[in-house]
Structure formats: C-alpha cells, structure tokens
Length: 443
Ligand code: FAD
Image (tube, rainbow, N blue to C red; front, side, top):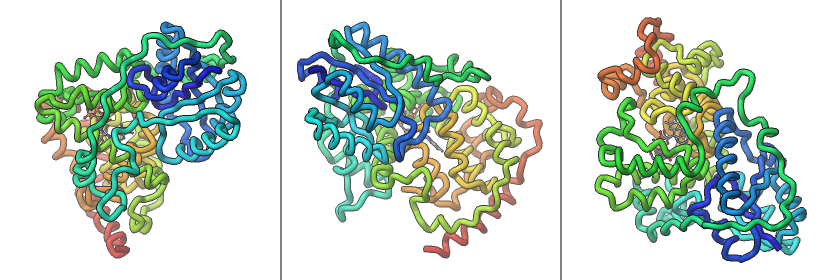
C-alpha cells in the first residue's frame, strides 16, 4: 500500500524528513498538497503568498515528476480531504513535517482519525531547528526575552545535519485524481499586479539553493556590517524560501555555521525560532496582544485615509514611502524599513498594529503565521522582547543613518520629498506617548 507525503510549508525534496520516512518505508509514494483555507485556525493566504505558492507548487510537481514521483492537489478542509486522499490511494501510511500554532490541532485530530482507520502516521521536525516544547526557562515557562531564549537553544544538542535529496521517488501505477493548479486561481488576473514579483523572484527549490550559495559566497562576510542598510543588498533574501520550506532551516544553519562572521546571521535564524516558539505558546498572536495590558491602549477611531496613505506609500515621509513602495512592487521589504514603516503606522498615525499586520500579510511573499504578528507586536510594544513602546523610531533620523546617500529612498520613492508630510512627527510622537500612559497604569 502506497505512502502519502503530505507537503505543507515544506515544498522541497532535500532535507525533508517526511519524504525520507516514506522512502525508507519502501512502498510507492504519492505527494499530496491540500489547499485548506477553511479549517479552524487556518488563516487564508494573502495575495502575494498565493502567487508564490502557485509557482513553488509548480516547481515541486516538476521535480517530483523528474524523479518518477507524483503530486496530487486537493482543496478543502484538511481533516476531510487527507482522509479522502488516503482512501482513494489505498494508502497505508501518511507522513508529514510538523506545523505549529493553531494548525497543530488540525494535524492532531487528523492523526487520531487516521490511526483509527488503521493507517500509519508519523510526523517530523522540519520547519524549526528546536521543537518549541524543548526550550523553557528554569521555571518551566516559555521565554519572553530573546537573549536568554537563544542562549538556551544554543545549549541544546546542535541542529541535526540536513538529509540528502532523494534521486528517485517511485509513484504507484494508479495515482488518485488531482486538481489542476491553474483552477485554483492563485495568480492575480484582473488586474495582474504581479509583474514586480516576477521580476524579483523565482520561486522553487533550485532557485532557493542557488540563492543560498550566492549569499554565502558574496554577502555573508559583510552581513554583520551591512545588514542594516537597505540599499546594500547584504541580507540573504531567504525569508520566502524558509517561509515556504524550499530550504529547511537545518540546511541554512549548516551551510552558514562555522563560517567566520556567521554568528549574527545565525542569531537572525534564532529570531525566526523565537517567533515560532512564541506562536506555539500563544496561538492568538495575530489577533491578541501578547501583553494583555495593551488591551487598554486608547486607539483613536481608525482614520482610513491615513491607513490608505501608508499602504500606498503616500505619507510624505521618504523612508516610509520607499519601504511601502518596495513592498507593493516586490512583495518584500528590508528589515530595517519594516521596523520604521511599522513604527510609523502604530506610533505616528496611532493605528492599531493589527491593521498593519494584515496589510503585510496580504502583500509580503514571506508572510507567515509567526514572524509577521510577532514582529508587529515587537514594534508595537505589546509583544515578546518588545521594543518598549516609548521607543519611537524617527524615520528621518533612520534615513540619515541607514540610507545616508539616499540610494534606497530615491530608488523607491523618488518624489516623496516633494510631498507634504501627512503628520507632524514630533507632535504625533508626543500624542503616542500620552496614549501609552494609559497602558502604563494597567501594570
Ligand atoms: P536575513 O537578514 O538574511 O535573515 C535571515 C533569516 O532570518 C530570514 O530569512 C528570516 O527567516 C530570519 N529572520 C531575520 N529576522 C527575523 C525576525 N525579526 N523575525 C523572524 N525571522 C527573522 N520575516 C518573515 O520571515 N516573515 C514575516 O512575515 C515577517 N514580517 C515582519 C514584519 C515586521 C513589522 C518586521 C519588523 C519584520 C518582519 N519579518 C518577517 C522579519 C524580517 O524583516 C525578515 O525576516 C527579513 O527582512 C527577511 O530578509 P532576509 O531573508 O534577507 O533576512
């Protein structure tokens, strides 16, 4: 009886423990991907993510086919659809790499159901370096501060070595019916806004591996020094690759570890771990303040014109407008500028972080359930290891510090300087600090 490998956010053949387990079982293999936008706790994908998913799935299907394998596409709530696929294939085993956050409950129920049907089910660690339940403070609670969290991770056994890519993946003679990828309509049509994405990215595992090699050769040595300047191009651009699992964090870790100057880069992977661990302990991260005293924050009524000006990159603050333009065009924004644009929305426009998080969710190709809300809450001051609320980024100072020659700002927002600023930075900063006083009283 065939094995099913249920692909989720791990669209790769190399270092894929679920695929490895299926190969070791020795029976024919069917790859399965389920487009599930409706199970409880599953957040429907944003537009940029749908674009990426389409292309990454096309690449995965092609790579499986080249090795004799098959990818079956199905749509609907995973609990029902995976069981249907198992029945259609007459499969005797299902393997997957673990998910964290609310999706975990879907997987747990499915595991129980399938085992009840007499099907072998096994899940593996493939998306984070350290399992969330293995990293705890001395008192047994989750960490709320990054530095001791990462120290605790680094004191555990080192992340395992990545698994090699299988050469052959034999499909059974009878493969169950699959949806056509095109019918899922993941790509934008009217209007087709994806031109900038096509120019910027090539989704799929081969391009991901090529970028990793290029980063190690060209950029890692200067990463620590240049990572904060948005025009330098010194960061890895691996975030969508990790988001979709075209590369595993184990592969990235072992490729970089031991290289001089890699510590800083590896600690950024640590922030990714911290975000996922936080989501594991706090599945409502995208909707609820991690620090409950922020529930008392007196957000003024939403000013939709201000929100739209921010979304469209028309605030008249050059670094903010440049970042929002980069995001809209490419589905990506440099980390420093993400912090500045987010701080501007929350602290100068006094707009609830959840509105910004939702916009990033819809426009980022790397948006994920953990990193996006985690970082928004970090900027807003309501999250783990949060920048204190009273730390308000001054976007003009940030521009002189990190884009001194204006290369980034003029590339993305050449006309921003001619616009009137939407708000006065000093006055809005003062108003934000006054609003924060209410939260302080809640302690
Ligand atoms: P590099 O500097 O090369 O870092 C290497 C890898 O480490 C990244 O690919 C990423 O996987 C991880 N990483 C680095 N910084 C962080 C961080 N602060 N949190 C979590 N992981 C990190 N990152 C996402 O992957 N998805 C998101 O949805 C996301 N939303 C964000 C929202 C806001 C408001 C902010 C301030 C940051 C957000 N980030 C998010 C984190 C960070 O900006 C991106 O991971 C980074 O810019 C990606 O570029 P890179 O791959 O070149 O990063």
